[in-house]
Length: 393
Image (cartoon, rainbow, N blue to C red; front, side):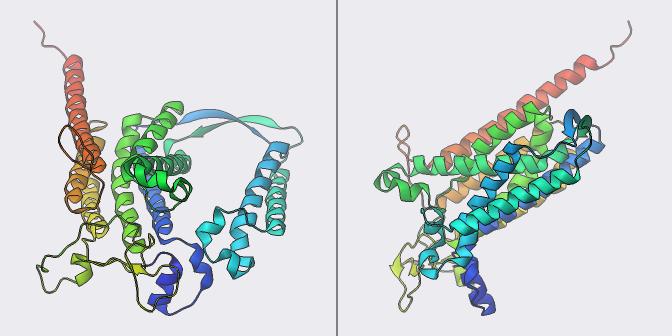
């Protein structure tokens, strides 16, 4: 397991680059997942724009103005935070930054680095505005296509998704949260995908409505991107060992050629520090599970990559807006429901049944996708019937 990139590069390439300790493996793959999702969504929105399904919006912008006090202050604050915390990781002594995550959420930091980087950011903003300054500022009308807004959409989805993922994980592990709320709240592990999906979807719905982007077209463009992002994100879960593993697997390996870790894995050096101490290990992440478990994040990566290619290859056949997204919801619900059968999760008491939170939500997602499919196809059929030319008497 590689809790951060330092362990990965040291094991794979034999290099001892201490600064890589600051790059969390799970966060690294989440970032890659969002980048790939943004690329896929932009490509799909561009394709739909060429088909005439999406239209640009116009807005007035003021050009030629000097930098305002608020802009300079905002850039200074951003630079200060990055310098005080992030830059400090590289210039302060090792004893203060040995645990990067604890350092980020502590009061420690470098004031000189914060002030210096803050002034640099504010200066760059002033210089950029000064170069574009006009003798007389003027208003101009610009046209913005939906694909031009993918950067904003991605940031909104990231922020809302991470908040939602953490909130749902807290509800799912309420008793653990009450024991150590501060530690649990700021831990990078323990993120519930469905919480992130639901909150990100609500945020994007609000954004699409605000900027007059066809909601179902946007959802259809996001369908393959969401499946791909989930697959890549699960690589981070597998590599970091963040607790999303399966139940103990004591069954014999079905195929001799199958690597042991694909069937049962103990997640050594996992980021949760779960299990028993590894003999001879003296670094921070020195635990592994006593019994091999199903590596469910790896299974989900493989399955969801296959499902991504299925959605991608079939996407042009879905002519009714929203049905591709409904198809994604059904596939996602099925995939997660069945993987839950071998995953470790807290079970609920639900009218005599004992499902996990993910099983309940995945079932609801499948039903939602099915209902959405039926409603949208029937609506499309009624519209075609209503607009069809009637036979002359």
